[in-house]
Amino acid sequence: SSIHQFLHELPKCEHHLHIEGSLSPNLLFRLASVNKVSLPDPSSDPSFESPEALTSRYERFTSLDDFLHYYFIGMSVLITASDFESLAYEYFARAHADGVQHAEVFFDPQAHTQRGIAYTTVVSGLTAAQKRAEKDFGITSKFILCFLRHLSATDAEVTYQEAVALGHFSDGTIAGIGLDSSEVGFPPEIFREIYASAKQAGIRRTAHAGEEGDASYVQRSLDICHTERIDHGIRLVEDEALVKRIAKDRTLITMCPLSNVRLRCVSKVADLPIRRFLDEGVRFSINSDDPAYFGGYILDNYCAVQEAFGLSIKEWKYIADGAIEGSWCDDERKKVLL
Ligand code: ADE
Ligand code: ZN
Image (cartoon, rainbow, N blue to C red; front, side, top):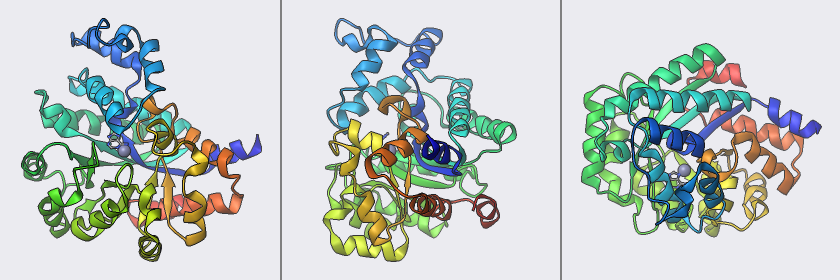
């Protein structure tokens, strides 16, 4: 349809994409075989019988933690820098095909260093893909280093210091920090020192908040960790004063509609607070989160929102402009995108 064509052609920015979440079941099985990584025995979990069985298991996640179980097993097949490069290049190619002009990509270094893969292996693969994708597709990108909140603050600090020591924040290899994995019971204040030090050093800051956790997780991310952005943030609507504050400060909320449905944060896309955000002037972008796990890339998410809300061209332009303004690229690049 013409609105689909319009959404396809609309210049898009993606701000909430975990590169490890773009690992398809097919590539997962292929890399497990090439790298001789053993997957769980199908007799204990039949989902590991085949890529098809795994794909259908992904349609039945019961919660964030249920998904994370599969997400961490999946990424265990990534071993070499070339594995990370292929994964990221495939994502950039797919995002480009969906009309993404600029992408800000999360990665979870601790999930790799914990199983003996060097931080530098991960980053060299990702940056090789980034350069190749910019040359081949004109897509610009940034990397955001996420800390796993189910691990300790000390563990996060070790990872942070490794990136600092390599000069990765000052040379632009990594644009900012984020916080992901299990939310409830792992509040943002656990990581307050790292966020304070990042702020001091002029490093960009975001955090997943208000996905499964209540609005106080959003408020504490802002007040205690001084995040400039909120990832998911859907439960912030439970606090009216917080909605007003976020609108006033133009804090970008990076929403992930298909993810929220798959992880049962909402029962359908129409239950997301998109209308409320538009009416109250909250800036947000629409993103895919973990597209290989949640049944769709960014354009599928845009289309799902259109199906549920029937937005006008003017509203879509407002959303797309907000996504550009909320991006962490320089003003020159923003001018080209706007
Ligand atoms: N890691 C990957 N996807 C995530 C999500 N949606 N929430 C928290 N951690 C994640
Ligand atoms: Zn996420």
